[in-house]
Length: 95
Picture 1 (cartoon, rainbow, N blue to C red):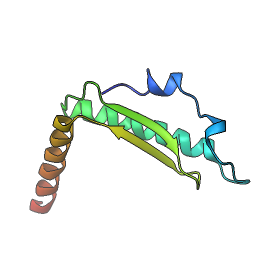
Picture 2: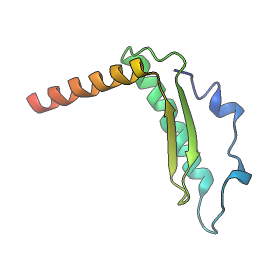
Picture 3: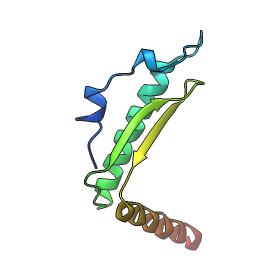
Picture 4: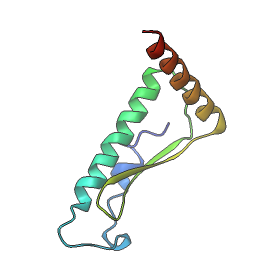
């Protein structure tokens, strides 16, 4: 998976012109939260051994100021993530 700290998120800043600004809403904080969440996901997938070459995680912000992470993954990567979640879910039910 592309590392958002090295590629997408350091080279792409929050684009103020792409957001309808509402007074009192902290859009930058939401975007930062999404950026950090995307980086955390990248790290966890690597630790889990999921091959995600070519995947993209992009930080965005919703109209209410909350962070949003847009993911673009190959079908094979999605299947690997689904299997990981399924296994974790089965383990949790067994405990």
